[in-house]
Figure: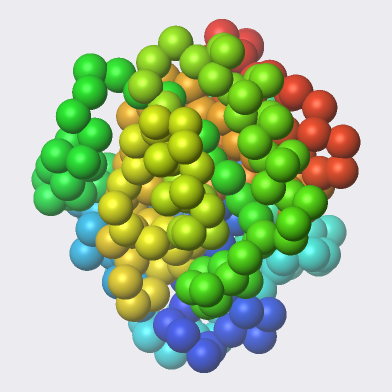
Length: 280
């Protein structure tokens, strides 16, 4: 059977720059749907990343492929029509494997079929140490997560500060929209670490102690811990102050596990709810 491999390359091998893991997961979901009735199968290869050691591998989901073919994997982050035509050409060809990486799929998808969710959930089978560290840091019977996105630059700028007009907006959403609706303890995560600590103290929210990341290299443990936290949440709230889309990291995790979510995104920050019982 022909095989398509959704691939995460090693550092410095990217043409377009490495995707965030939210984009990568979104690509997994939609590749699975695209290939499901095609006679081709999908595998995921993250063997060149530090993230691989944090997941209990499922051989029906993961594979460890040829390093050079991973390095040369085709990237499809904008032109999804080109990916469609490439998959058709691959299907008609004598090739047995096609290594690609894509963020294929709509960012505002509200539900996924059961088969898609079951397949994607295998990416979240974190090892016992990740689960243990989360349980240790969040000693509560149940919790909700507030994910606050301020911009990717904060991952590489530890001293970065949000603009003066952004913090009052965030606080207003927390005070008027999030806190009044929360039914469990709130856990705050953010790409802006200093703001996370400040707001957690101000509003009495829990946090994981690490500085969050979104990539799959180097210190990948914080990424796994954040994803593990999101998948075990009862409700996921998300405020995106710097972009107009729902986060793949937070929103797609919610959809994959059928967790209710509430999104507030720039520029209007209207309350957008996604219920867990929507039909697949």
